Image (cartoon, rainbow, N blue to C red; front, side, top):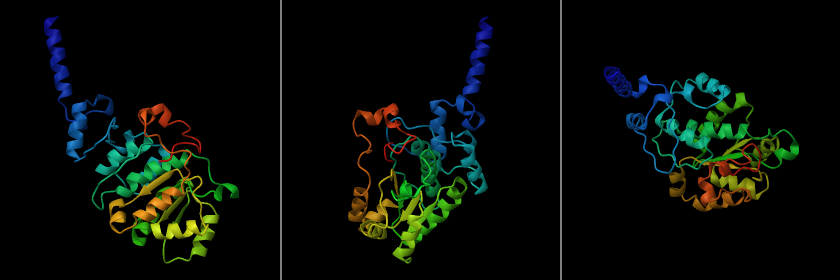
Length: 263
């Protein structure tokens, strides 16, 4: 019996010593996750951070989104995608830092699309008149156009419509597209303020805000515009900054309704 126990212990030790890539997700220990993050140079700050994604197939994403990820050629997640997507899917705020070309756009787009899919489709004119569910702010027209391309690539198959609100296109043309209804607006701060103040757009049901290259936006002097844009958002569903913010049940309440906390 003693020899059997020793053999069991040795077998367990051998099992635990395997590299994380040789284990399935249920077999991963905290040590494995630590090594995994070191391997991909992932550093996090904050409480109760979910484990990163090892492989797309292990994520909790719906098959239709995984099919889109496969169709656009994303074979495996990048480091920012591995960690940012699970946090975004938990309805939590996140500040992500990664270099250009590291897949930041998909890192914020995928949780955003999941969020929008949980809400009723904007089909009736009275719903379209209340504005989009999400806005993505970018410091420059060029970056906004790049984000628009990526959003269309991911969102079209899901029936999610996108309108870019940027300079170089007439307000009237953009206003017409906005009146048709869309789930996502991608904009530069100055032009978005313009269409908001001229009532081409309202943000009465906008519950998700992304600021791409936020540091650059602030450096370029857009902080007053960003603050002004945030004032146009509905105030009845702001996240609590008290103990409720640590309560998963309360944070996810009304998740499948327009009353859920804004992101």
